[in-house]
Every structure is written in structure tokens, then in C-alpha cells.
Amino acid sequence: MTERADVRVSWEIPATPPGFAGRVERFTGPGKRRSESVVELGGGTLCVLLLAAGVWASGAVGGWSTAQLVIVAVVALDLVGGVLTNSTNAAKRWYHRAAPGARRARLLFVSAHLAHLAAMGLVVLSGDWGWTAGNAALLAVGAVCVEFAPLHLRRPVSMVVLMAAVLVNLFWLTVPLQLAWFAPLFFLKLVVCHLVPEAPLEGARDA
Image 1 (cartoon, rainbow, N blue to C red):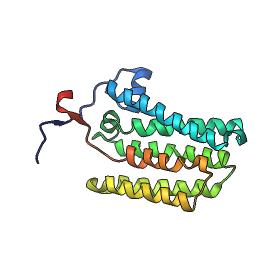
Image 2 (spheres, helix red, strand yellow):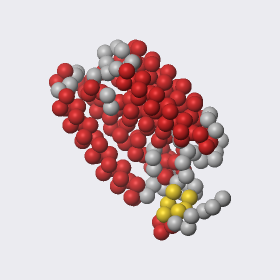
Image 3 (cartoon, rainbow, N blue to C red):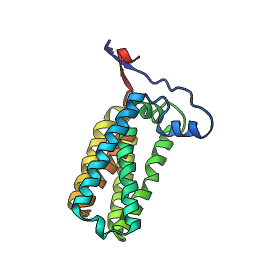
Image 4 (tube, helix red, strand yellow):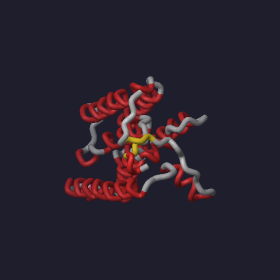
């Protein structure tokens, strides 16, 4: 195995404080660097503003109830933030650590997002059971395919699942244009960013 002098891989997980603060750190990934937080905050703000501007320009907001508007806002914030958080070295180290129960924790995390599908399908899309069930099936099958694929294949398998989910949503599980962002961000966050193990890379100068 050839190593690069300018790249360092660090799987070391720093200790976390007790109580609520520690639980928060373990949820997002212990040992997050300030630069990671800056990218999350800055990039997340940019993407949320772009998303909000697009939805507003579509004119959909005027036709939504308060409950629908709140759900869309919360889900959008969660997906944008989740894509960035789950991409950090801190999250990769934590969720893909060599520890009993790590796989179960990843799959439970993915399963919890069925609530997103229920809220979007049954409230925002006014009871669209077909869309909800279809995306739930895509998520379940896709998550299993990625999680149980051989290690060296998990990244490309995740890309297959992402592309298939986006295409199915584009042609068969269609939604109004103002909600077309949901499926790409949803599957990107869970299937690619969360489930794919990637080495926490640092530049040699950052060590």
C-alpha cells in the first residue's frame, strides 16, 4: 500500500463531554473542526436561501397551509444541513467507527427519515400514499443494497441507488416543480452521505 506524504487519514475519535452537550457532539460527529462548521454554516445558508427563493418564485407558498409550509421548511433545513453534516470527517469517523452496533445505528438513522416521507406525502402532498410508499420502498431497498455491499463497492452502489431514485421520482413518482428538490437531497443525504464509509482525510499540514 502506497501512502501519500501530503495526505493523512485519521480515525481517532476524541472524547466527548457528559450530558446533553456530549449527545449533540455524538449525533453530528465528535471532533468537528471549526473549518467544517464554517463550510456547513456558510454553504448551508447559501443553499437554503437558493431553495427558499426558488420555492417562493414558484408561487406555491400562497397555496400551502401553515402546516404544509412548516413541514416544507423543516424538511428543507434538515436535508440541506444533513447533506453537509454527514459529509464531514467528524461524521464519517463516528458513524463508520469499528464498534458493535454501528451498522444498526446507521440503519436506524435512515429508518427515522421515513417520518420525512410521511409528512411530505401525507400532509404536503395531501395524502399521496403511492408517492410515500414508493419512496419508502426505494429507501429501504437502497439502504440495504449499500450497507451490505462489499466495502469497495459501497460508493458506486450508492450512486446507482441515488440515480435510480431520482429517475423514478422524475418520471413515475412526480411532484410539483417546487418540490422537485426533495428526492435528490433526501437520497443524497441518506444513501450517499450517511451510509458510504469514507476515510477522514486531512492535509499533512492540518495534522
